[in-house]
Length: 377
Image (cartoon, rainbow, N blue to C red):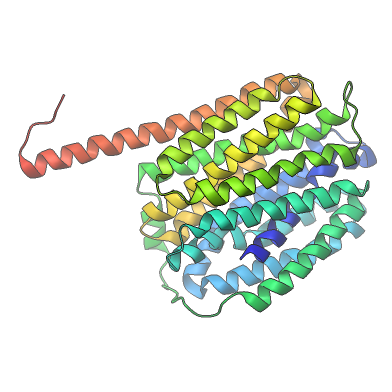
């Protein structure tokens, strides 16, 4: 599962550190360059629910293997693409192919009673995203960079094929009932919303930071600017530790708060404070994501569709928020992007708080109805 996560997330985000180089080569705006990330995450978001429903019929393992194998093959083709439009089309197809792994990975572990291992899964995903970004960013060419990432992904895919356990699951052959249960709880909807909003803020900041670091007065090279992705190492460690805690509510709110603090710390135009801010926001966001993902799988009666909806919301946020955030930065600068990102985090937190409050009131009413005792006011 770690190998599959490494391959999937390295391929998904490989263009991100070389967006300034891509924009320069094709003479396009930062917002257009960000489409190479946005269309892949958007296509993934659209395809993730069908993939999760498919896994209810054919099983999790075939979907996981098919997803990673096809997306790796497409990744090996990307360095040879000439036109920008065709590059965007291939990235969209790759996003559809990639959808199977994140759609099914959490449910695959939950089926085996390994909810605490979800934190470790996200740590593996984090390492893949970090390794892919660093590798692509260090070579000074987006073609060579994404090609090297695809080669590494191919090796990880080979390990996945060899090591992923067979058996241990019985496909349910039922899809509609599971989907109905995944959309029937307000708490689940609030967790989908926080995935959408927080991921949008997170990807927007990471999309835009390359342009900020390359611009005056900092004017860092792409190789140095890509080192910001080392913050992912802290995020992976944090998701593996705090993400496995049983008190998911406290971890989620606390880590969203840490994410907000990190965003604020990035405001000064100083390499040191920017680096510290990204370490904080990455550590907070990944642990919060691990807690939210485990919470969804603990609450949902049917884990496949619920996990698919959560993952779909997560990547829809990456696509819409990430692309919009890059355009916001290009038009109005970093400080405005910070304010927008903080507002998205606040809306997500508010949604969860309201859903929990509604659950508390519903439980109190049910208790009063069953016991005949008056409600406390």
